[in-house]
Length: 160
Image (cartoon, rainbow, N blue to C red; front, top):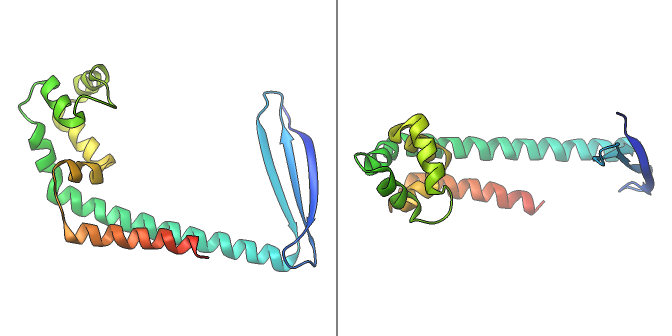
């Protein structure tokens, strides 16, 4: 199925020397897509520079997060797994969730049945090491510094 144009709006570009065309299209399943075409060499170049800059900031944030995660996994993941080892599924679930929120006990049991407690808790640590560290009351200055740098990178993009 093809998309049909639902409306086009033409505005002056940011520098005023060209135009920006905003086109809205919809298909038979009411899926909408928006297209923007910048008809100005300067503004188009500026937009591409902004996109490139944002991609660099995102890559830097991802790199920092991965570094913090790697450190956390090497230092604390086994303690997280050991914290839940030897417990019944219900007790491990209660310690993990406090009896509320995700996962429900049924979902937890299903996941643990499929992969086992140790593998499950390794995965949950990797997917949410910050929450796991909080639950274990771990304060690691090196990890906190990296996460602070990451937050700084995030805030820097908002000031552009």
